[in-house]
Image 1: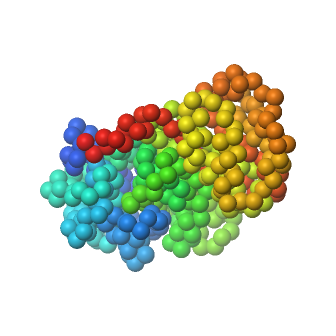
Image 2: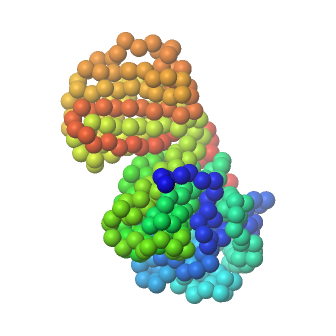
Image 3: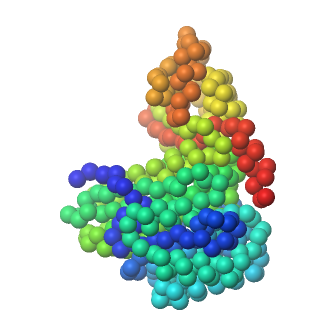
Length: 409
C-alpha cells in the first residue's frame, strides 16, 4: 500500500482526541483554546523558532521535549502570544501545564503548551484555566473534534489547516495527521506558525526527532509570506505507537516509508499556510531544478518566493521576469544567467518566459491569463546539476498592509 491521503486532522491516528473551545482570551465569540490529547503516553519531538526572542511556551516545550520521558497533551491558545512577558509569562505557562495535568490526570511534565497572537500581553489566568477545563471535558475523537481544535488556533487565518495520510509499515496501517496555523509573520526557518503532528506509529524518540528536524528543511522552512520570523514558531510531533507496527529504531525501509508519509503531511500544511497568507489572492510556488547542490536550490527558490517585487508582480498578474532573475542573482549562488530557463505555469496553461539569456517570444496576454490563476508556479532550470527544491509563498496585496496596520486593535 502506498501513501494515501485521508480525511481528517490530529484525531485521524488511533488514540488521539482533540477539542476547541471559547474562553475569551482575547477574541469574543470564537474558539481560542485547543487541546490535543493521546490516550496513552507518546514520544515527542519538536522544532522551534530560530528567533533569539523566544516566547515563554517555546522555552517550556524545548525543555519538556528534551527532558521528559513522554508527552500526552498539548494545550494551545490563540489571541495572545505570551512572548516578552517576563517571569509572569513563564509562570503562566507552568500554571497551564498544571491545570491541564489535573484535568487530564497526567503528569505536569507530559503537557506541552503553545500560544499565538499579540506579543507583550499577559494571558488572563482565570480565562485560560476555564478554557483548559472546558477543552478537557469536550475532547473527543472524530472529524469534528479535530476541526474544532484547528479552528481554535487561528488568528488572522481565514481557514483551518489540516492534513492526514495513511501508509502500511510492518504490515500495519500507520496514520499521520496534523493541523497548523499561520498567515502572517511567516518566513523560512520556521514561521509565525504553530504546527502539530500526531501519529500512531511506533518509532523511537531519537528517530522521530531526526525525521522531523530533517523534514522541516524542505517543508515549513520553505514557506514565506512576509519575511518576519516569529517568537512563537513551534512544530511538535507526538507518536503513541498504537498502530502496532514493529518499532522503527533504524533508518531502514520502514523509516523511509514513515519519512515519506510525514513529508506528505507537512508539505500539505506548509502549502496551506502559504496560500492563506494575509491578504493573499494566489499561492506562489517556486521550483528550482538542475541546481548544483540541494542547499543552492533551496537558497534560489526561497530568494524568489521572498522577493517583495516578485510577489507584487504576481498580484498584478504581470510577467515581470526581470524581478525573478534579480532575486536569483542575490541569492548567494553563483550561476550563468545565460544558461537558465524560466517558465510560468498554472491551471490556465504553461508558458516559457526566459532562456539563453533573453526573453522568449511570449504573449503578455497569455502570460497574464496564466498568472491570474489562484495557484501559480514559477519553474527555473539552472542546467548545473540534478538538485531540486521548491518554496511556497503568496502574492503581496493591498490587504496585507491593511490587516497588519490595525492588528492589535
